Length: 337
Ligand code: NAD
Image 1 (cartoon, rainbow, N blue to C red):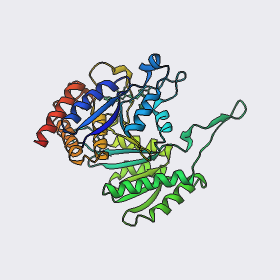
Image 2: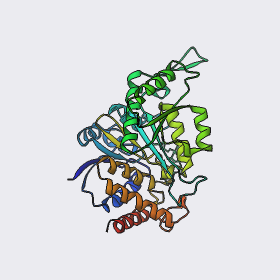
Image 3: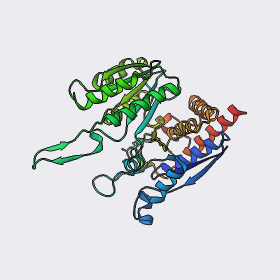
Image 4: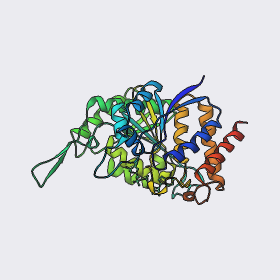
């Protein structure tokens, strides 16, 4: 059976890495009808908004989307399209796996971590105000309902993917009410999943432990802000943003996007690494139930990166974005033959 997927190439380097990713995905033979829609700074003039209503409508209809990065202007202009999409569609769960790919330069080997980040609450909700002229207050919101649905998501994910352990990350020793509620709720949800080990770590200790003994960890369940920081730390363990995939999930809709941004200075040069978006497509294929295709695409990326011949500048090669997409496609075809 075929799939219909909304595709948002984004701006900056987005369209180039999306084109390379589509070539690689096509090699898996999975039947995907792409619904291409535009969002981002490049469509401001055309639609009067960087996030036209038809983009949201398409995602609501297809339930699955893949997205390239979108520039967020600093200081003035529109607010983040990425944050708006997550809010409008209530994509409450953010998933960021960090897996070692042999051939990518990193200080570590054998990393296999997943950060599950709450996407809607916490200090990240951006509720802040000035108190007089010389003080500012940011409000940290943590709810039982928000904590419960993200904890359940983490345990369901761990169960589905054969993971062994979930670690709740918090600072409940200091923020006894907000982080205390997050931890208390996670502990209650954990009781429903006796086959998955559960533990918790204070966020500062978690960061140190990840640097010293990353092999002790598996799935990390984080409130929004800690998840933002810990997931970048984990991306650093496996070689950085060029190889870091991600996904956002709501109750019905899933939107897949790499962790990195639109790298405007490289836009239009056919130069940047499409790997993070191709690995994001691996997550998408798994979500669509296309496990064989997902495994072949992942294996294809590992082969091309491991050989180190058809790779982009950041991986030590001189291949263009499109060359690397073609090389992964060739590897995938050979793997599936
Ligand atoms: P960035 O991730 O775009 O780029 C930082 C640097 O990382 C680049 O200069 C480049 O050296 C490297 N890099 C990133 N992606 C790469 C790739 N695929 N291949 C090779 N090298 C790569 O971060 P930034 O410069 O802080 O942000 C640029 C814009 O992207 C901003 O407007 C920001 O708001 C936006 N952004 C969007 C998203 C998203 O769409 N989800 C995420 C992060 C940032």
